[in-house]
Length: 295
Image (tube, rainbow, N blue to C red; front, side):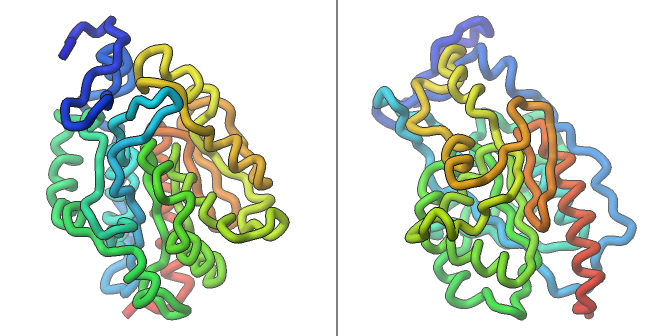
């Protein structure tokens, strides 16, 4: 495997036929040894409360590209763990679920290996990443007007494009969250889960029609193969699909922007991870306080 930081060839993933990791060039430019985790201190954190957060992660590793190659992906560790730290420090336990109940897949090639705080936090939740809940069981047994879940969090990474957009279980979670005034939090490619709300629905009845969100720009996904971040063209484009359903995309670049529309909080990229976490933590503390359900 090449270690030349100017090498734009995708790196071979020997675990699967015709599969690839990002090129050394793209890793040198788009990963870092430490995250930007900061300001995750909440003096007014919820203590002794009953509310939790449901995180829906991907259990899929490989995204089939337009040229037949496969991108070795999953959930982006920064986009997953940094928001989690904020919500955890705000006093909310986080349950992790995947569609199958199989382990969460992470893009470990993007893990900030010198970030001791994030590494320790990953260790805290490692068992839940390895043995998550099965989302169908959560839908059957843990949702309702008195559910302990105060919010739903869907992290980013291209793995979110696999399975979640067509899942009826994800659709059921969305419908529950909207019907029961819960927050929904996501960033980068995570908003692919929003496509599940269109399953078996007429376009005019799409639940997120008229919402404004941040999402990873399609323009960057179109150019990523040029630098070997991905081994081929995208099979489809997320912002384009959401816009077709009536969602307004408020960003066309990657600046770390976070946007809240009603109780939907979104961010544009890994650069938004810390601010998204802070925004979500403050919103959830306020929601828990307003509910009067702490014990």
